[in-house]
Length: 250
Image (tube, rainbow, N blue to C red; front, side, top):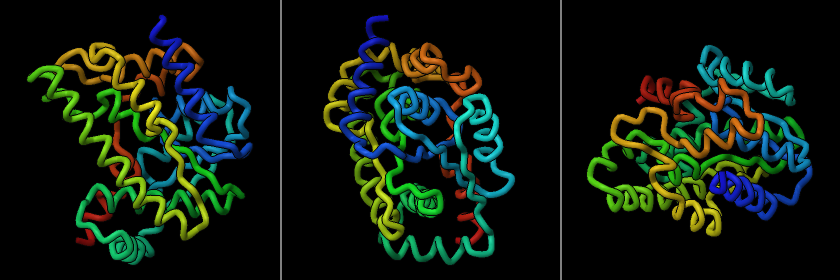
């Protein structure tokens, strides 16, 4: 319980220090991370609009609708057109100048999120980036924990560094729409705090398919719907079907 209280306090502090606008967007898939962020921000008094992007039949659009209805929060959806997608993907790759598939996919996603934010009258969008990195959300942590805590922490360091750099690229794309993407859970203070949380609170072994246990416990405690709190991870590029679409034009 004490760890949950500390995590709750630190997450709130990080949000407040990161965001000074009253009206904000939340990049929202309906999963535990974005749902927790949305609930924290709403409870802190921010005017929150949930922003979801994806192709029409994507998992993220369908699931986010269900969770947003349970929350009762304002929810905006942008359905990606397959007609314009190839040209946008091409231009984004040219802009960020990387062959990293993950970076390109995420920057495409943030391009559409930024467009949706602009249409919604928002210039700041918060993301829950950092939670998967700091709380062992990725499958790679299952393999790492077989080799001990040092391996887990080394992987965490590389994941955090990659995420920080990737979000710089995403902000380059977002800036074209005059949108700022903010990541309260990637702040130096929060990263330092989260690294000190015992690994057993995050992942319990190589067979742990759920992971992020302390985050899920906190989400449930503060009123995030259980459907979201226990949702298995589905990365943005897969949940939105951006990865599938990008593979077709390669």
